[in-house]
Image 1 (cartoon, rainbow, N blue to C red):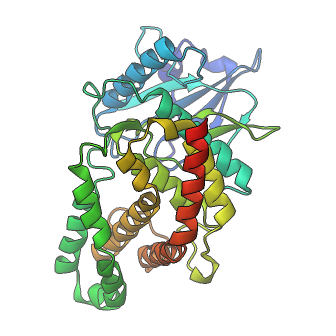
Image 2 (cartoon, rainbow, N blue to C red; image 1 turned 135 degrees about the horizontal axis):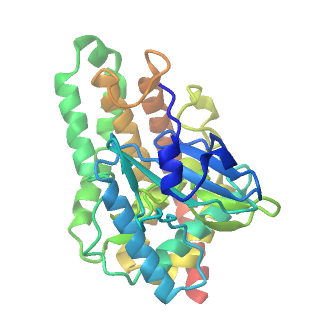
Length: 363
């Protein structure tokens, strides 16, 4: 069923429906997003319906963003942090028929890209994520809650993978036998994560948790970074979550949707660009243990996403939407090959990290 904002929703934010042009907006798949444009002066706003199947407590999203916004306003007042425009009643969310709506500013002169087409874009995006994390590094995390509990908990994802292996239909288990064995051979990644979780030097930070390049607004003319957007998953987490997701999605020229694994390569220039951008901003705030795990970040996220796809295939494709029968199988295979390609270049990539760390420490 097509979802569109009705007049009551628009009026709740002080807008007159007859004076607006409304259209679908963006490439996101979670929330329903619309661009609102006033006919009289062309001013624009972004309206979103929050997906409560993914975000069970929309109020947590609003509270987390408000606390972060207040902290940034006090400590980094010049920083552009996108916060919701309140309703006419002063609320950050409008609730009607158990639907949660919010309105945020449209940032003029900005664009997003769905993939990094050159190292400069990777650098600019990573720099924005690093800046946000650096600026928030002094915030008290105790009042924050998880908008998606256990989102990047590899221990939980690995346990779900093992359960899926035990309970899978025989035909699916047989079809995936080799792939299962391959992922099990890399189980040391899950073991390392479990060990790191208990290390007090491997701290929690306020992380974005979804650092795909289209979650950064770029200047439409220069492609320089403007700010981070899509802050629904802003919550406490580890440095490897944000950095790992950038490695997973920036360094390869194809996404997890590509079944032709011969196209999966590690682009060293993109890896260096994102490491440089990220560490220029956040490098000075990291502990020795966190610096030692920067290469592990990519392994962590690629492995976790791979076993999530394979878990879903074994469970009968109940979570990720699929377009054909082996879609999740192919996604998992794609991530396995990406993981192998990354590990094959570990010495080269670690040398890049060391160089970027050295530069960041001189700043």
